[in-house]
Image 1 (spheres, rainbow, N blue to C red):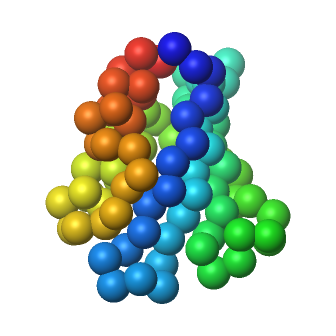
Image 2: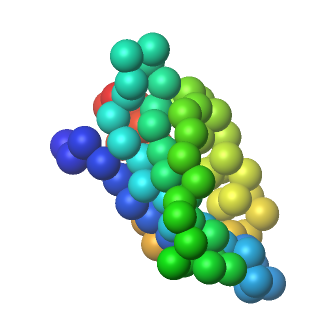
Length: 83
């Protein structure tokens, strides 16, 4: 399984969306991520760390709220569980 996962999430009404790059866990066991906003994909990415559970809850919430995801929530969750 790849060390990274990239996917796009877009709000159902448009206007809000993100490209997320998830990376391997850091030394503290947290998932590193980068996020680009659909408002300006050329702007520098926001960077941070989260637990895999936090990211899974975010993706589940987007799916529940009707966001469009170019990767299935199941595939994203499987990738997270493999970390």
